[in-house]
Length: 371
Image (cartoon, rainbow, N blue to C red; front, side, top):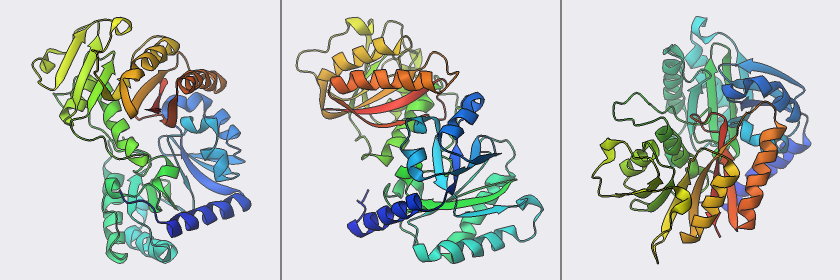
């Protein structure tokens, strides 16, 4: 991806500074449904003066400044965020000419700001009702007819540091704003693409986690090159292994339980039937990336990651699932996170991103680089 130019970065910083100095700004924040019980506490700590729930797990907040949401340690509870610069509460399903009216308004309001791309999603991304998915697609099609040709034709072509026009539509209306994908914590409106888990080739739901994690990583670094060598800890039954192999990666998978037989004989796979704590890489063997989705106490998991990270190449990637025993409040998970992050930092592993993925449950996905 092309780097953001200095002029672009300066304009983004100036706009951020203006927002931080201005009156409270409405924000659309996506708090996953699994955190619904503690959502009021999360929004309160974001500094929200008021909040309205929209769609499945979106909250329209009147919040202080972007630093309150994006700079807080509670940011990991918000999968996605966007400043609200145009809101149109309405019922699009019952409105004649909604698409044309909305498209013309978006051109008038955002055309002069030259977004790198325009992406429109739904407030109910997993709903079986296809009406709003079709409406979002048709609205984007009409908007793209009105705007001049944009640099980013799909989400993967976006520059993470350049502004995108994101919109969400649902029975509650249309909600829009411009922000760079990295600040929003996602390349896709709402945070991530929907990942189909109904394929007969799917080994486990864990595969969707690494698929989404690799997509999320585009916000922060170049794609993992084909042929990269991964060390996977706690690989059974092989859902993540399968996804890595499908992306032409090489995998050394470690587990004391066997992998799914559908993975037998794969030439890019080296499976070691052994407890992770007993595994020792061969002399001189190095890895490009390390993946850990092990169950059990996270302190024990990160200790194994730290031990085996010594076999990573400099700058090697670590994808670590932080398992939280129970999420009943915001302080417990934050305290655990600080403890795990501190252990990693002491071992010179640099934490550069953290999020809650669509297929995460009581867990967060942390991204490190080896020092």
